[in-house]
Image (cartoon, rainbow, N blue to C red; front, side, top):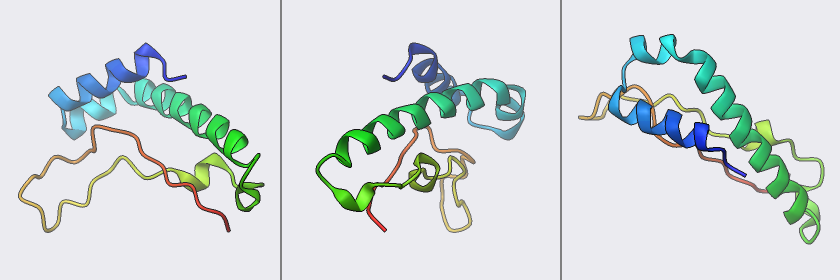
Length: 90
């Protein structure tokens, strides 16, 4: 399950979306990412029960980066304010 602290981190990131704040809260980010990774692991385990193509897929292979590509965007916020993953078999 997603922990309250993970949601708190994402709320704070939305209000303070800059590199200085992010670097000062890197430990919180790592904890939140670990929590989300655990959720992805649970989902992979459950889904692989009926989709054999996901057997052996590791959570880390499914995660998207939190860093935004701001090169061609009007919004120059450096970080996404959410975690995301995509699960597809190999």
